[in-house]
Amino acid sequence: METGMLFTGVLILKTVAQVYCGQNLALNKPAWMSSVYAAGSVSSAAENSVDGHLGTNWFHGVCSSTADNDRSPWIVIDLLSQYEVHNVTIYNRGDDVPERLHDFVIEIYRTNPSNCSAATPTICKAYVGVFGLTGNVQCESAVLGRFVRIWKPTTSQYQDLLTVCEIEVYGIRPDDMLKSVFIALPKKPNRLDCEEHRTISVMSHTLKLLLKIILERCRYKIRPEVASCQIEVRETPYTQ
Image (cartoon, rainbow, N blue to C red):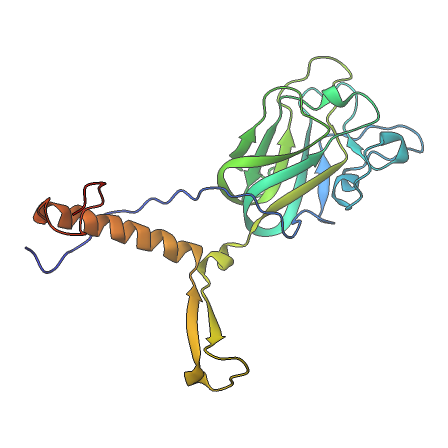
């Protein structure tokens, strides 16, 4: 049996999206839209959707809405830093015409799509059908970027506006994926000396992925050398 192993090749990691419910990354961040609905004293500005107000009555001036005849409406939020986006919570208009929020795409950009025509989006989620009043949309996979755009590629009629009352974005900073936390646990209560503590490590997300890959490659190399009758080696229901 070989005593040494050499691992070569290119590792392509696809981070699985998880639902995060911590800090709202979009709160009070810059936001703008393809157009703004003008309705006298009622505000429909883009910043209404990131102000933390969870009201859904458009007449109270708490929602954002594009203008009539905007045939490809969108709203963009600048998170002001690169994040790994996992899920987006959307509060739809609740007092009237909630069906206007339908068939939209949540896109994540690393560069500003409004200033750079070459900016390429990564799709977090393409939502099909009519959205409910409030819902948490989980990305198909975690997406790295700074700019979040909600876009209706097509509209059905003149007043098929894009209206949202609040948008919350959740995820993590890429730096957090590289951190490992060490926690000291006292062996007995009220102990202060280091030798009287056990230490456990909360591994970083990236380290966990790499360890799983190394483990699977070790198994791939070892399995051909292990007899099926060896005790507690093979992971099968028939382990002896």
